[in-house]
Every structure is written in C-alpha cells, then in structure tokens.
Image 1 (cartoon, each protein chain N blue to C red):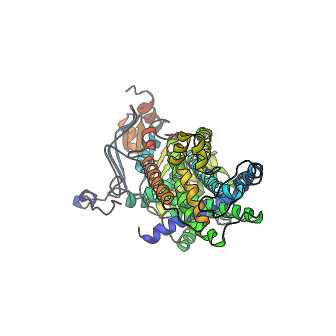
Image 2: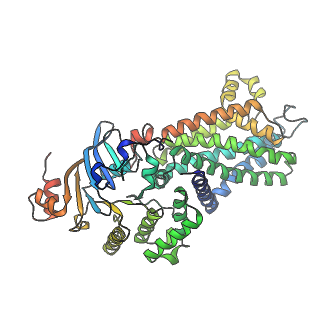
Image 3: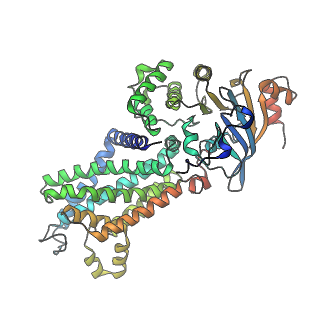
Length: 261
Length: 269
C-alpha cells in the first residue's frame, strides 16, 4: 500500500483557503484512440450541490469511473479533500459515497444484508453498521423494510436504498451518476428532494450527474460537459450569462446542441 | 485501515458469497449431482474395464470409484472456480463489481477476499459430496477428512484464481460457454482425475506430458494424497506456484492502471 506516502501537495492549500471536496484538474482520458474526456477541470466545494450536466455520451460516466478509480487517470489530477486519488486511493475512497448509473444491488439479499455488506467493505463493525443502517433507513422511512429482499421493492425504493448504502460510512462527498434514470416523475422528485436535504443536513458535497436540466436548481453550481469538454462551469446565473441565454435550458442548448466544435 | 478493517471486510465478502450460494438451491443441487453422476454411474460402469494397480498413496488394490473420488473433488472445485468467475463477469455487468472495487481497501486484497469466499463455498460442496460418497461406502481414513482440508484450500484458491484470471479477460457473459469447452473439459480430461498417469503414458507420451503440465493434475494428486494423510510435496509446490501465477495475473487484469479493464473499458463506459 502506498497511502503512507505523505504528499506535500496533498496538504491544505496555502493562504488558508478551503480545500475543495472534489478538484479535477486538466483531466483527459481515452479508450484506444477515442478521446472521451479532454482537459476537464472543475471543483466542488464542501457542502455544495453541484450538477454535472451533459447529454448522453458526454463522458459523465467515464469521469465518475476515474474519480472512483475504477479507471486510472493517466493525465491531470483528481483530488478529494486534497487527497490525490492516484497516490492515496484508500484515504480518498473512504471519503466518498457513490451511486452508480446502473443499479448495483443484490436483488436476492435483504435491504439490511446489502447495507451491511457495504459497511463490511469499509471495515465497519457490525454494531456500527447496524446503527448506521437504522439511521439511514429511518431517514428514508424504510426501516420496516430492512428484512425484505430488494427484489420486492419498487425502482424508486431500490434507488433510495442505494443512496442509503452510499451513506453508510458517512462520506463527505456523494457522487450520483444519473440516479433518476428510469424512475417516474414522483419517484424522481422524491430522490432529488432527499439528496438536497442530505446535502444541507449533513453539510455534504454532492456531485449529481444528469442530462435533465430541470434537476438543477437556482443556487446550484453547474458543470456543463459536452463531448468530453467542460463547456461552462459556475453558478446557474453565471452559466446563463456566459452563454448569453435567457434560461438554463437555452444556455444548455447553446452550449451542447448548436455548438459545432 | 487496520487489521480489524481487513478482517471485517473478509467476513462480509465471505458471508455474502455463502448467502448467495445457499439462496440458489439449483446451483447447490447441480454442484452435487454432477460428481455423484460420475461416481455412481460412470465409475460403476467402468469399474471392470479400468483396473487400477497399486500406486501411492494406495496400499492395496482400490475400486475405480475410490480412485476417481479425489478427481471428482477437484472437479467440484474446478466448476466452482469457473462458476465464481462467471459470477464475477455477471457482477461486472450488473455493476456490483463496482461496489466492491470502490472499497477503500486495496484492490489485491478485495480480489483475494473474493477468492477465499469462493473457496469457502467449494469446500462446503466437497464435504457434502464426501458424506454422500461415504454413505455409499467410498470412505477415506477418518483422519484423511481433516487432512484434506488444507489441500482443498490450496487447490480451491488455485482454481478460483484461474477463474478470476479468465473473468478479467472475458468481456461478456455470453463468452462463458467457451470457457466450458476450452478450459473445464480439457483440464478435467487431460489430468489424473479419471486415470492414473502411467496408463496415459502407455498410450501417448505427448498426452502424458500435457497431463503432467496441467496444474489440475497436481491439484488432484494433492487432494488424493491428503485424503490418505500424506503430503505430496511436488504437487503442493506445483499448485502453489500455479496459484501465485494465476492470482498475480488476475490482480494485474483488474488493476485500473494496466489491466484489461482499463484498456477495453466496461460495457457501459
């Protein structure tokens, strides 16, 4: 394990400024000769709800795979609370919770077994796992379903269990890759509201990837990703202003649809 | 991360694998029926055709059923190793491999835990098989049942590591049929599981050499000797070396920086 190495750059930034929850800098990635991400840079501050907005194929999932170190980044840097993912993967991964685009949950195990399995992967004791499970399921109003097999749950409930699972080890940064895909409008809204409440209550940074503009709210920070490049990055107002548009939808269309780069 | 974190992680992975196995009754039954068919039908039929002379570790003439029992034990582990590999490909397609790999514990450790979990499941199957065979009067010395345990751990790890290596190379579930044809059957038949190697040598020297090269042969011999309370040092070393090789390559295959996953990307990438 190389996470004992102490990195000078990994310390807090000079001048006492806040260390971003996630800082991506000059990140490029390719599969074979196809470039999927090109010089991507942006940051998410602690406690901030950031929306990674981009059409399908923009490179959002690849970006998530790099941040979670499923793929190795060969260029640029990815820091989680100042920890370089490449050099200190263990400490960096301990700070993040992830909900993948594809549901990744054991249908034949119970809700509780799924959550406890995840807790074990993070080295949590059974007692701690039980406490966290109770707290998270209670928050979802799903405590009485702990003994049910996941197969018996609806799509929206499964997603919420996946969010609860991602929170088991109390991460400081939550990554969600298109978490509302395949859900009906009510379930979708419930998930968004839930995660926004979490962001406020736990002072947790959230990076929410989506292709649906209406999932971004006025106070959010937005990263517009298109064809592997960051087309805009800033507050919703700044992005609208920068694109000389009247609304975020218009700005998004300008930045992704009509842009011929 | 301290030792206690590592232990809890291992416990969690083994518990999940055992639960999944026990949930799949069909898989449990299939895993038992396969060797029992070989034992009760194939071996009974061939009993008179294939005479086995006295070779170590046996001290007397043995029935053909007795001879092939260690081979069938290894077969259980071979199938289980491949089944685990299948479930890893499935896990990867279903995304649960990702939930494993984003654990903060090092990846080599997570894969090794996964391997141990598969071995635990295979040992469960082997002992149930041995109990049924025992009821049929195919028995080893009582101490052999305990002595075989470490051999089963080692051979199970080796065959599981082979499966894991294959799973890092197989991109999709559909390719698994190829594994059956090109891995399981040749490994099983070109080994000492069904016939002693001196017999193979009588008919073909090349085939003998292939059998002798096959790590499965050595897994069978390791189990055979252990079942009679003896250690076959050469088989032990051979299986251990094969384990180191397969596991090393499998960990390389799952390494985000170098392996096949990084180069090819995943289906949903």
